[in-house]
Amino acid sequence: MIDGPPQQATAQAKNVTFELHTLGWEAFQNLCGHVLRESLGQSVNVFSPTKDAGQDGAFHGVWKKSNAEIYEGKFVFQCKFTSRRDEHISLSHLSDELEKARRLAKKGLVQTYILITNHKVSGEACIAIQEAFLMIDGIKWFNLFGSEWLTEQIISSARLRVFVPRVYGLGDLSQIIDTRVYRQANEILLSWKQNLAKFVPTEAHKLSIKALLDGGFVLLSGDAMAGKSTIAASLALAAADHWKCSPLFITMPAEFTAHWNPDEPNQFFWVDDAFGQTQFSQSLAEGWNRIFPLLNAAIQKGTKILFTSRSYIYTAAKCHLKESAFPPLAKSHVVIHVERLSFEEKQRILYNHIRLGNQPKEFRTRIKPFLKRIASNQKFFPEIAKRLGDSFFTGNLILHEASLDRFVEQPIDFLCDIINKLDRKGFGALALLFMRAGRIAIPPTIDEGESESLSLLDVNLGGLVEAFNALDGSLVSHAFEAGGALLEISTPINSRRYGDNRGGSSRINGHLLGRSQDFRTTSGSSLWGQW
Figure 1 (cartoon, rainbow, N blue to C red):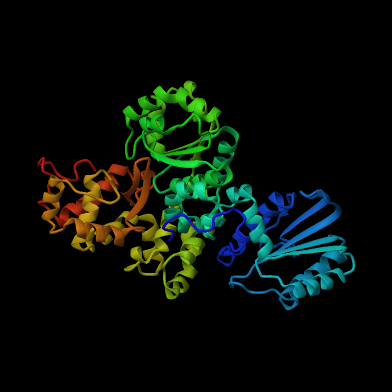
Figure 2 (figure 1 turned 30 degrees about the horizontal axis):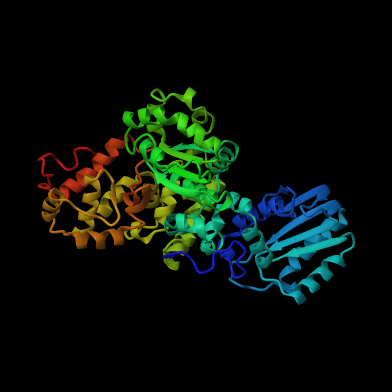
């Protein structure tokens, strides 16, 4: 974790490295495709990983490189991935690639062969490999790009990092983003670095980038736990990196009015739950209506704005919003359709979370045969992958088809089991979050009434702080507002998949209430009445 501004924070820091070996083969191929387009100036046809005939990508025609060189003919691009850190490549690693290159050249399908790898490349190895490929009849040009070159491209191209946000979680971002913006984005870096290392770009992410590039605004909506916050975090970091925007986290119209600076065009506003956190708030909708002219002016000045909202809340808000006063609201609305994730995307999401989570090697080995079944389940969504990668949620999980199906399809049952096993400190921390409608400022404080209620559980403030630290990343997650950092409750409740959202919450509340029948607020009403 990074506690403060770095000693070295220039975009060209020479000692920056990225954990490219953790990407996995498909994610590495995706990175290579973006590098070819953004750094080498050429888009390519990318082939299926299972039937690529020895060519991960191909191009036929005139290649005008970004630095003005021009080549003509047939090009083949091959990716060579290793999961071993700092492994050097040698000619012996490439026997399969050489044989495939000979077959392609014999068919007249390749004249220029480009090999991109995350191996380290020494000068001697580069010469030997180049000579071997150029000895193949038909191949006229050969280029080998290794991890050092890839790192240089990532560091030098903010646009590349925007389209491949996983790299934000693979390196020391304090050396990528300049010192000024780093200080302002520090909280994002602290909380989202690990999540972004597991990030799988989806259509919603690509459309969100396009909306920000084209119009400076995006409204990102989706069901609970659909991945809105992860996409939003990647966009916030991209804005800090690409546009040098200062990120501000707000939840209310008045905060935008207070913090927008017309003399500082490079600002990025992340408005979380813009129209209400768990239910539609008419006062928020009316507040945005009043300042829509201000939002228009800010965007014209160069400010970038991101709204997030749960789908059912935005549906309720639409009839109260003056969309004609703020056209980007409808024009730049991106919906996350979890049910439209491809099977391949679900597999990559599962792979990233389980491999980069905190599960022991034995668990990862034993669950591997079930991953295709989990990814093909119609009720799978990204939060399930996150929880399978976290040992906190799988302590009593039986790795059997029926048990895993239940874990995916009925996550509330598992959540209730976990709540029942919490100690008093953990239960008290969760109870305080429920009393605060799901959010509490950091560092936490409690008033006299809350202290009286928590005393029934024999929990004090010190115990709560200890419990919040223990629950962070599992039942509790970080959030941000303009006023500072927050902790919020994190539960896998999805209104479309598991019935009415309030009904799901009532089931959780029933388990909580069962733990403490006499637990009341000072007003005498049930603590769980609003949930």
